[in-house]
Length: 181
Image (cartoon, rainbow, N blue to C red):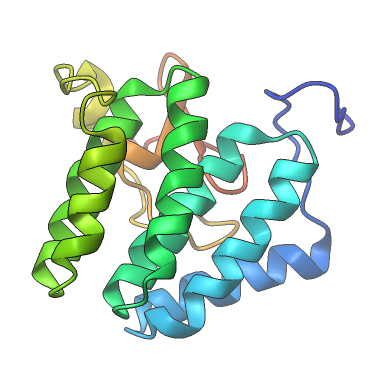
């Protein structure tokens, strides 16, 4: 199915091959404890996806950028978090918003960025829904590779979308992945 920019749920990636390689590079940096190199790549690709009318994937990349900026103690984490949380809440991704908010505020606090965590709490604390019980399919995550086979992104409950019974979609590149038996 060709990419249709008017369909925000389109599965085909809006990333060009060179951008796909940049996503793989950012995930490589993150896996090798180089968040300062990964963060601006995730942020740029998030804007590419946002302008291609792929808001849910853009939110995933803004989230990843925010976490990477936080790990490198960079205040740009707040800007990326605002973009991610706004999109996640706008598109009813309450579970993802809740998990991301908790992870990020914890990371910011851990890295000595308490004022950044407080800023996000003031701006989003009352908008973030309480976490829902985990999706019963979450148990299948143990039967998944730890990273997307296409882009290398981590496959975590907060960053995947279940598309049908037993199939999930990478939140970054949209690759469908089936758990192994």
